[in-house]
Length: 162
Image (cartoon, rainbow, N blue to C red; front, side, top):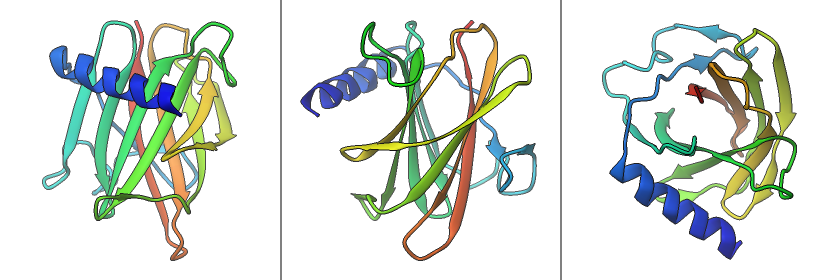
């Protein structure tokens, strides 16, 4: 747990120094990419905080239905891979408090069009799934989560590791 906090802190610090724009997109309930109003990354009122560094580690925070959803992607350390070459981590915050009672699935559409869906494991305030994101090009990362009130929420973004 301490290790993840250190990694997270370093990612935010390094990302703040070398912030770059990252394309964002959202998936539909069936996790197919769409451009419906409210899902487009350039919607007025949508707040985005984006940080990236040269090692392929990045953090994006996006407002989704009143929740602050943070996406964090980083290369898995050799010997510590948990399902793939990269850790796809998500944290959901409402009113300044991380939610620990959500049900979530993740999906990645790879640059070649193939896709893979995984459930997440809880790691402190974060939810995590491992994916192989070694292939150059844009990977579409998506989540669908259900909150304790029974409502479903979707969000996504693109991750490029060229």
